[in-house]
Image 1: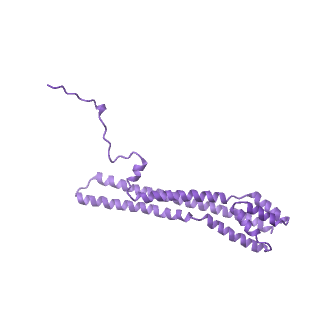
Image 2: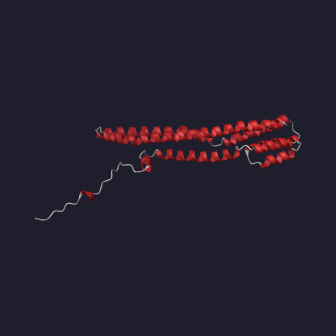
Length: 220
């Protein structure tokens, strides 16, 4: 009788479950093709936030010494020096003051109007592209819901073809499609937060800028 060899169980090769998820990337891809635009929207929102945050932070810096020295120049009837000082300051406040001092012979009210006009322009430039974040905050969750609804329709269509209701089929397919809703909501919340944070930065600059400009206008 031939000898029979039995391999120990420790040498058994485990079979990987094809539905198992081992990384975040695999989990996201379970959501289907609708995840592609959602992920793209997340990357776009991050890009716009970083770009606008850097610009606003750089341009909205308020130099207290600038306003203080400009006021001293005005009181000493040195408007040309005040103009040069403002022009050398590469911030929104410097450009606002420069627009007023670059109008020789104008009255204080006219200078104030020029500054106000430039201030509105500077704020508009700061708000550039921030509207896209608001759009993404609204579109991303809707795309997630569309992916979920399309997935549910597909699940019930497959059930109708198989004429068999299986908890595994329903639960497995539904959890994959719920990934779309979850990811869409997360991207929407992030874009919404980015948008309002940038708006807070702009509002804070607007208040500080108006305070400093008023100090200058008082001595004109």
